Image (cartoon, rainbow, N blue to C red; front, side, top):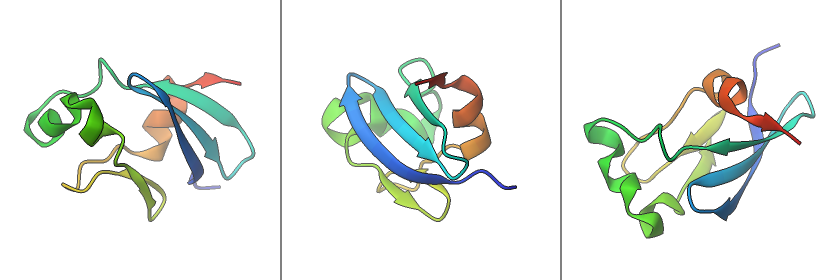
Length: 78
């Protein structure tokens, strides 16, 4: 089964509650993960909150995204 994000809710700071298509929900804290040129706008919290589910993961308006498998790996299960 390919992992997909089916629901994403902003919590606080750089934390997002993600629900995956396998029924597991995890909190991901991306504060230490926003490195590199494409992720630079995400340092602005107002911009960080503008993610949406696109295809099978979360994506920001500038095209920045993370693989759902990576988010699953770094997330804390609820």
